[in-house]
Image 1 (cartoon, rainbow, N blue to C red):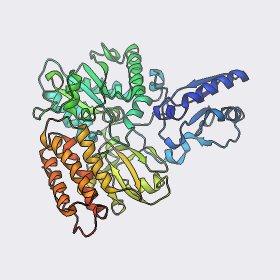
Image 2 (image 1 turned 90 degrees about the vertical axis):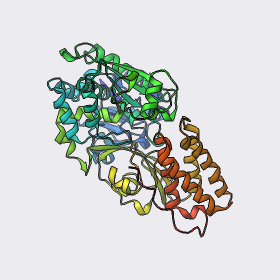
Image 3 (image 1 turned 45 degrees about the vertical axis):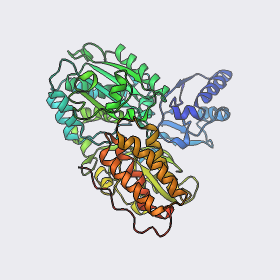
Image 4 (image 1 turned 90 degrees about the horizontal axis):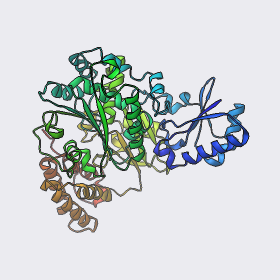
Length: 521
């Protein structure tokens, strides 16, 4: 029987993966071919989706991008192991994949995301099995020593957060996975949930055992129906296999998981707004302190981490803290799943150790712009990330290196723009985005962003440009230091970086670029 892999990842479905499956089934039936179709996740080479693979004695041979019309000739090539215009060779040997360091995404695109057995056959649940033999303090030592920091954008050390919850005294504790992935150009959370959901479940289960929590929630944005379906299916399978519920793996530990779907508010990516939404209220930012680690969901100590943070845990527990910490640079340890998007030739997910430069990512790995025009700006870290010009392409992908240049790594999304971009409009978009998505609780974010849009509109019309630019700079400082959360606090990054690095777009003879925003304490 011939085993054929066709992704069920949302990106692949969007470009015809379901139609390819229907064509394969129909053509194989007409020819009397015995086949098995596995709906795997995506490997992250978005420009080659749908990427179809067939199992051979040499490994899985890939073809892409495949359309339904290609299926008859594709099956001929698979049966004969002959040439085909879409043949890419053995998937693991494709250069774009081979040069990656896949720790978190090692199984994504490889395993059947609905099968616990397939997950275990590829090394899954070994981290949990080891965790069940350790004390809470021993697990905390591993997580802390690994150097893992929050992959959702804040970069806070995971071990410290877990230790705080573990030491808190309460009759109940919770684990919450923030899967409200809303940044432009980001899709890593979605990919891992759709392609390897058990790694998220395993990481959350280990967290529960470590801090003494017996209940967890995965908060997924409503725009991710495929991820919701995949996580619910995986949770049910894990329960059947004894990896969730009572006496996990025959131990004394219990842990239950539940998926909750958000209504699409960007601000619910902020942890306290997310907690409000989980509790059934409108997503509005809470003042801190108290921190969620002390008083979180339903007033109980709560671990809140991003999807990728939890997904990194099984590798650390299975292979040891040092194996993870050996990758990276400075205080940025391990790997980062970087998402290349926008006007780029080779867009997709590229997991690599911290330290690769921005220029390598854009020019070498990404292949430059899809339009063929020169790269003018890249935005790193979502819609609230700074715009970097080519002069800063020597910046290493590292939390501290980006911060030193007034930038943010955020969730690892990179959006590329060519030389046709108008940076005034990009600065305006940042303010408009904040105005639309603000929860409205604090004045600097609610009012500052609205005034920002109005003032940049005046600049675009040429009205008192120098004076209005000074107003924008003043608004940015107020928002940065006066906002309750990162939505208002980070909006100044794209605005000020556009003013600093692309000042010519705002008018001639405006004098020197604005000074760097004072660093937050």
